[in-house]
View 1 (cartoon, rainbow, N blue to C red):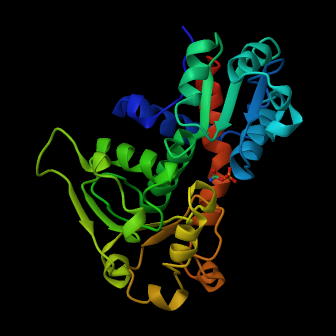
View 2: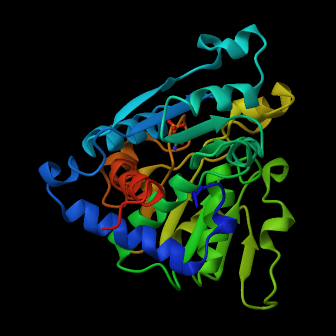
View 3: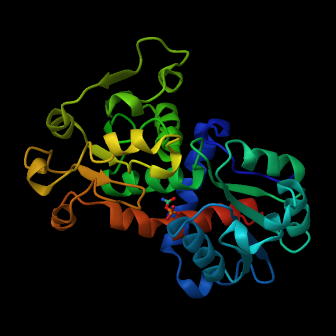
Length: 306
Ligand code: CP
């Protein structure tokens, strides 16, 4: 049976752990061994929304595994611009490839593609909903940098309403027994209550605050996000909040010695460039981990046992 990766909600703790374990094995493997895994296999990248990291790291991952890549980076280059439907596009591309990687602005589109296609579908971001491969690379980075995930204290800062990376990651962390969350967001971009609900009353603490310095002092991981202009129905609202939080190196003076600043990237102004030189900056290695975790994902979903 084919296996899709659509939402962190679908994954058990064991499945999440399996991806992370596979990534450790992949990273330890020399490139000349990895290249033997997927010769003749084709990955299609269907990107209806812009991307740098996700698309190119998936493509790099597939090339390093010996496979090849087809696809498009924008809708305007496809027959969708002539009026072809999303599902007809899926049914077309599935004839030319072995696995589909899809990014689309519409929430639920990856799940629709998975339902329509006989191929494995990997969700590379559907609107504000989910971005599971990003979450797996975030978890891999945390595990690598801090040596553990369970019990860490998380602070999320920025756009918590529209950020699919935040939505995916919070759900995964809750499954992995992370219980202490500090949330810093402008009033209009707060995390929806739905994400804080669960079946274990009292287990999780979500502290909403405007005190960014306090959040920095207490956390093990500071997860910054971009205020996403493209998600705002009204750009006047975007202008009001776009520079709400800007992290600078001096603000990290009170941070724990081991604290890491992560960000799914791209950044705009929310992390000042002087943070890059601090010992806390974890977002560049985090981005680099994208190739490793996506190799682990491709291998698993194309049926290769490590
Ligand atoms: N983190 C992430 O999804 O980046 P891109 O939009 O560049 O793919």
